[in-house]
Image (cartoon, rainbow, N blue to C red; front, side, top):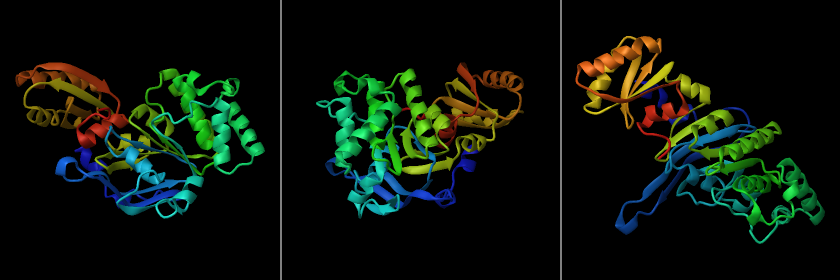
Length: 336
C-alpha cells in the first residue's frame, strides 16, 4: 500500500539539516473537554525543524492542528509540554524576546480600522522600538514594496480583502523579523489577489526571508513551499518536498472510482489489475494507483466493476497531487 511508504517515524524527518531557525521537541497542546469530556489534543508531541531561508508549509484540513502549532510558536498559545525555539529563543521562557524575532499574519484581520494604511505601519514600527524617523522610513519602504503607496492616506476600512491582506503582511515584516508566520494567508481571497500575494511572498523569500505558512490549499503549498508537512489530528503524517511527497506514491496517475456497494472488495479486485500498483477505499470511493498507460487500464476497471455488479457513477483521472498524498494517508479530503 502507498500509505505504508509514506508514514514515518518523526525522528526520520525532524531534522532538515542546515541552519535551523525553528526547532520543536515534543510540542503538545490539549484543550479541556466540555461538560466533563476528556481533553482534546490539538498538537501531539510535534518534533520539527525549519531551515533559515526556506518556505515551509503545514498542510492539512481544518482542525489538523496547524493554527495551534503557529499559536505556540508565536507565543499566543501556551503548550502543555515540549519545547520550541524560534531564532534561538525559547518562546515559552522568553515570550517578549521571541516577539522581536517573529512576524505574524493571523487568519483574522487585526488592522486598526481607526487608522490609515500608513498609520498602521508607522505605529507598528514604533511599538517595536523604531524612532519616529525610522518608523516613517520603514513604513514608506514597505508601502512601495507591497504596492500600497497610493493608498497610504486611505482608511483601512476602504481596502479590498486583497489589499488588507497585503497590508497585514507588510506590517508583519516591517521590523525585519527572522521568521514570518502566515496562518492560511489566502483564505477567502479571490484568485487574482491570491496570485498577487504569492508573488509578494516569492519576493520576500528571494530577499532571504524565512516563511512558515499554514494552508489547506494544495496548490498553494505545491507552488510556494520548499518542504511540506502534512498534518492531521495534531501529528505529522509525512514531510518532504512537494515533489518528493508525490513521488512517494509510486504512481503516474490516480483514478477515483465512485461506486456504491462493498468498496473494500472492489478495491481488492482493482488492485490486481495489470497496470495497477494498488487500490484503496476513500471517502470519494476507490482510489486506484496506476503505473502504466491509463488508456489501457481504464477499460479493465469498468469491466471488472460491472462484471461484479457495481455501477460506476463517477470517475476521474488525475496526476498525483498533495491532496492525493493526503487521501492516501487518511482516506479523506484536505478540505473539510
